[in-house]
Length: 83
Image (cartoon, rainbow, N blue to C red):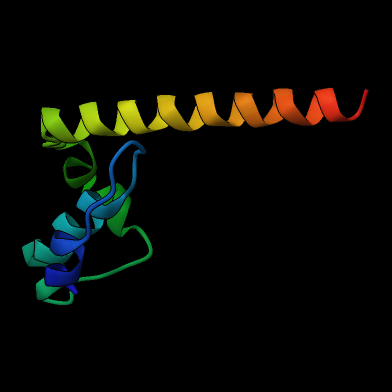
């Protein structure tokens, strides 16, 4: 599971992937010291700094802008057809 979370790539949106990976790598998790208060007891795992490559953020931004542009063009075309 840790390998799958490490290999999975998502750009442009925030996820809990790194948090889940850090939980599974923690000594408490691996020693099965679990409870319904696990997250509250291990908040340091949640607040560790995320390491997102600048290139990934740049690519995600460009793709988002292109999608918005294409969507606006499609909306304009549909509005002209309906008038």
